Image (cartoon, rainbow, N blue to C red; front, side, top):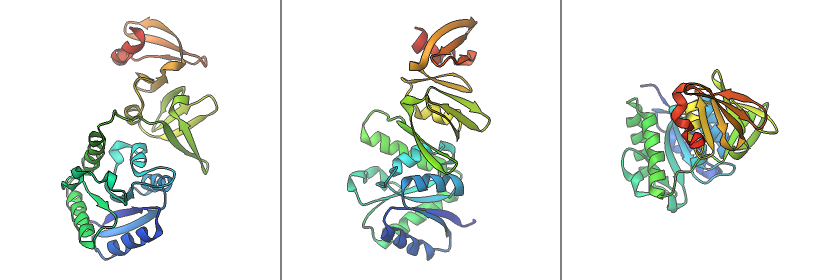
Length: 254
């Protein structure tokens, strides 16, 4: 097995130094980078595609859970959360399917986490591993599902925070998505299915395999052909729904 490419994410310098020191003694792991906040983490995970990420929970810009929410589900690395706040230390993380380091942790506990990671790398279910972790956090909180309130967009060296309520529509363009607001059109690399799962279905409607619209931006709907409808938006754009998405339209047609 090739070395496990590992990313360290923590806003505390001493914490990063300790993690780095411990990992460097392990021949099966290769540290590919370090991040000091959530935005850096998002950028490096997307760019470097590490196998394993030691991810702090409480960080500037974006917390650990928000970082995961911004990533495409199919591209999630194995995650070991690290934090000093015990309110996040759910008993569910004690099972071998997920892992969680509560600061301050003993070296023995850390090496146990590494063993879990190595076991995970021996199979092809790393995405399942991390998705279970996210689901456990959601289930244990006993709160309604939380949808994205903002999307991080990087363009020409700048970072934009796009509030989802300001989105007029989203169009697929090859491997990219075109996200239109009243001020600007942003382009991100993500799949329609992935972003659809993160948007509030009470606010957004997928009418076609390549189109998601903000329900509040609908000006008029016309029956077009069989199960197809023409949607006219307040900004004068028009989109035809796909027949296979007819069931999605019930919330606006009934």
